[in-house]
Length: 412
Image (cartoon, rainbow, N blue to C red):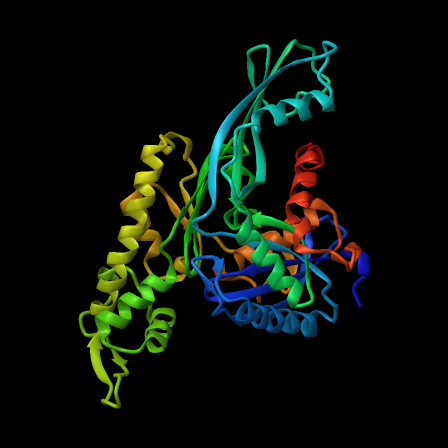
């Protein structure tokens, strides 16, 4: 039985599935996955809870499966958040150094000054991510504490989310008997699972294709410089196949998963698939190239939209390491070639790395977010067994606010 103070849980509440990963911190400071649970999700649309009861059931099923595998009773989790309500921006803060030498208090004050921008009504800060500090004009400083100077500046990336969306996540978990210890933006969690330190340092773009949304995060010099959410995901591919192949959505989903290819050049002219019909009609034989053409058009659209985002934000020169794609969309055959062609950048598919234990079972891009959440949970150093049983969703953003105040422990 794992030690109770050494267990960390990531809960990915996605549009198509709810996934639970249970991990134990190992002697080297990394994590070993000891449990995995997954259940179909029907109460989420584009990353947002629309049916509490359905979401609660899926959470219970996923958690129960992970508990049986790990032998651990899950009391609390680190959950992910996504959706079109997410808004982010870069800000700058500046303060005078009080005693000529930068202290932790000076750093906290400059971070607070950077985050003083008015947040829209109904929104709260989820993350304040320092990019660089400047001291008397000297930039690219990662840790200014102890340095001598007069004027301290900071550049930060701020992520905000709708209070209602986060509250519905915590309410669903609470009704499932699980407390939410912390919430992280899903593409930040996925980046923790699939990116290398070298990629983050020299500059990389993460594209995380989920069922309801496709999310982006850009890193350079080890920091996050941009995040974005596109409200198109795996379900759009499924609906395209449903319409294009004249079959049911359930059968289209099966074809997408088992036969999915986004490059017609990779499909032989004589390759065919059997497509079930609707209304009791007999199945039909259709060329795989027809299926690939349907998927290719949607994949090209998504990549072109992200290319526009990269160019509009003038981020192209920040990406010498190219693009890492993860999530369900990255399992399509030919996705690396197609994305590289459209984006004009090197592309690789990102699988969860740097983990032990049941690594083979989570060695799939669809588990990147849940694994990343467990890693962030462990990185923060709070065990899921240390959470009070009377935790309520009303205190969610107070906890997030406390995390912001405690940010020094995360970055230094």
